[in-house]
Image 1 (cartoon, one colour):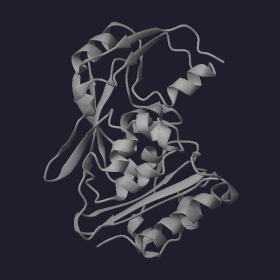
Image 2 (spheres, rainbow, N blue to C red):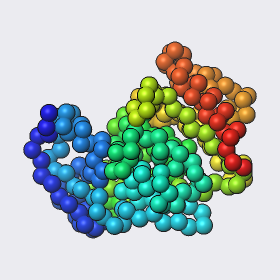
Image 3 (spheres, helix red, strand yellow):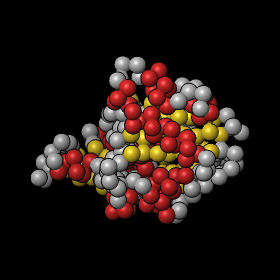
Length: 269
């Protein structure tokens, strides 16, 4: 199938993008690896596409002493290849390298993945575990949202009309930090059936257990230190967090937590 007719706008800078969003209802694209297929299947029928792939402000990655700020249009492949700084010392590169296939990673972007908000997407799970913060520009200026609060449901985010994701800031973990990310896929390139991302950083006090691919927004597990230390197993943590969900429905997610914890043993310290 082919998409229904639509108008196409190409923004060359952030000001042009913001002006276009202020004047009409647009669907923003950059890599177009998610919205494009949905349009071809006519599951999505935007009247206007706003292409921001050439906006320089969205294509930069800036490093400071404490974080790396990725422009929303930085591609998965650029993170995978190390052409932009990796604040985690390789964890983000590893996650990026397992997103879909290389052809998708060449064009798909970190901001686009977040905004599409597929519950099974990698960055939707990984970035909240890394305590990332998202900068959003809109009619009232720029606001910042923690990654764990950005996705509010399947394919739903906190973005309001006229707003655009500008950047994703990922703080640098300490040298003592450990990391694990595990996902189940039937074959390479598919979206995960269950996933878990875990950060344990005692020097900064950041410890997080995030579960993804639940058909909803990512789940932040309570008492992550107890889960990481094995005092609470993954199954019990999920049963407490999702009491209305049958145990069989989250069995793979519980295993993903356990596998991510096992993987942490190989994290550099």
